[in-house]
Image 1 (cartoon, rainbow, N blue to C red):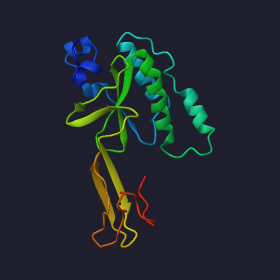
Image 2: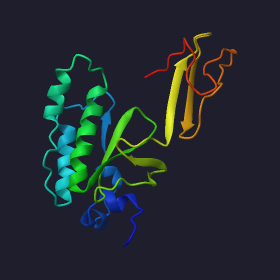
Image 3: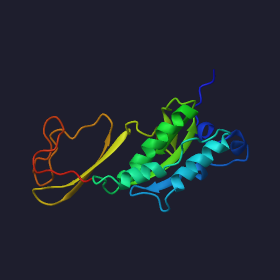
Image 4: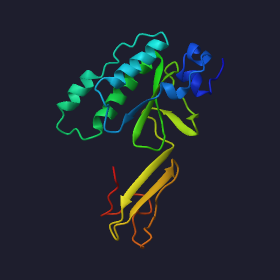
Length: 189
């Protein structure tokens, strides 16, 4: 059994690899607030599944959109997450994994990977981690406005890092010893 370690082996069909197609051309980038045109994400995912010769049953996200629109608690940015959750669940039994490239922006660069349904690990694209949708990121961006002086503070944390005991440059305490924000400290969404 051969272990596949190259992203291109999972994201591209053999014919696409033979033609020299790059992984970038198979990325669907969706803004955190949603698709430009409803149905684009589902059409992209269905097209990628078809490219690999499989039938994309259940890939449609219209039902997810209708349910979200009827939900009074729906906030801006919630619909894309619900769509990605739905598509991830649909793809797994088909032998695919919905993946995102953690590119450090507030968008969702989405890939459809043929993985046999097993979430990949250790993949990168242009030096950035690629992970199965729903798996924890290797890095987290934390930002806030200091309640003591108003300064905007941003941290880029690795998965094992914590903000335990962190203070602002003004001296104001922001996080307790366990890394939880102190009362009055509100993290940006």
